[in-house]
Amino acid sequence: MFDSFWPFAFLPIAAPATLIPIFLQFGVRFFDVSHQQSWTLLYHYSAPLTPFLAYGSIMGIRSFKARWATHLLVTTSLLGLILFHAPVFTLLKSGFYYQPAWIADTRAVLARVPIDVPVAAQNNLIPHLSSREKVYPLPLIGDAQYLVVDLHPNQSEYNYSTATRVGIEELVARLTFSGDFFVSFKQGDAILFQRVPSH
Image (cartoon, rainbow, N blue to C red):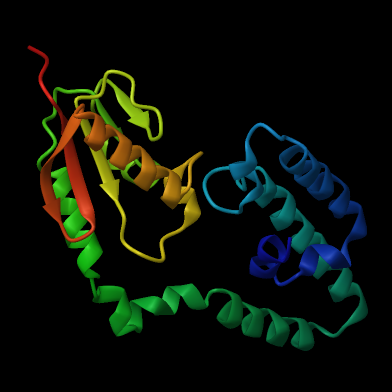
């Protein structure tokens, strides 16, 4: 919840009536046991909260305005704007322009996946393959002719969809050991597997 409120400077808390729809939205997200990923603030699951939080912020500012002098409100707003919109300043940081090696590795592997074949990939790689007719999120494979995995260290568990890093590694080992797939291309920790053609 902290991650939801801090971009709005916790202003909705100053307008308690606006918290009702916010907490109802949290309830809808957190009581859905079939989609644990909706618990996170990533992806699109947070989008319905934004209008409620923005409205709560407006009402919170309004309640402050009634209590405090205008110049204090302006000062607080400017400080909040600077503090809570600091991500904009990442454009000035050198790390913003640095590309880690794993990104280049993944791009090299993705470039070798033919456009007209079914493919299975980790959750974070699917958007790069979504123009294909059939794309499966690992551990689902379906009739995929290629598998794309990126096993670089310290990545988010959400990249593995419903599996874990260990689960994906075990799946890849099983498929390789069974002779169904072979390593078609590898660069760094990014690996492209191809299905062994049936005779």
